[in-house]
Image (cartoon, rainbow, N blue to C red; front, side, top):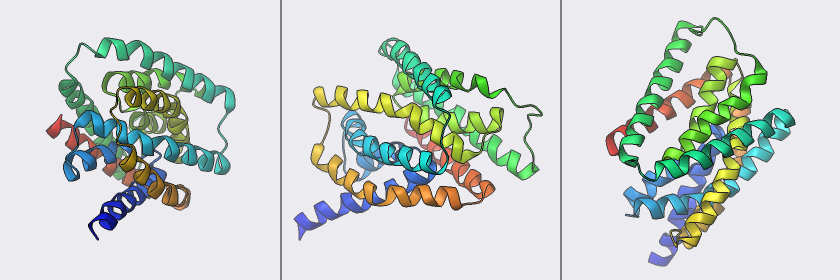
Length: 250
């Protein structure tokens, strides 16, 4: 009975995280890490490595589903990924000498601002920004997302959608597709790195991944069926919850 529960619980949690990851285009890792540390008592680094086992397949399925429904421009997406990977590579080395707890709080504060700004814009019925940046500059957003990814190991998928929606007037669904494409390469590299360091619980990670694989496509379907306003409200609330968690727990 205990063995069955120990297998069933990660599957169910993985299914819930996969659904959320499909809706928000984030792979579920930002939610999985506090679940693993709080519910299963994992060390922070072990939780990060284990979450990647779920994130890589979830992101792969999400990207496939998003591009089926809304193809992304290949050249622009490739340049976005290149900028993100370059920024991640440069800042990851620099971040090794910084206090990650402080960085997470700063990043949480920035997410908090983004969430409040998004909700306020919806309440006002219009964006505060009266202009839209040209779409040819979208690859430069990868520099911002990649920098966050390199500094605190998360953030690329969280920060890209609100920037694209706010400053480039992209729909949230398309913005999430760009974000998934951006995060995929760094997630694979990170998983290999954590695995080499022995910081992956493969059994739990695989169970989370199996549960997520069952629901992530349904989450993507929900994201494309939801009215844009409702999806933006849901995403902003998710940003808000994440920001509060990062500020409180560092």
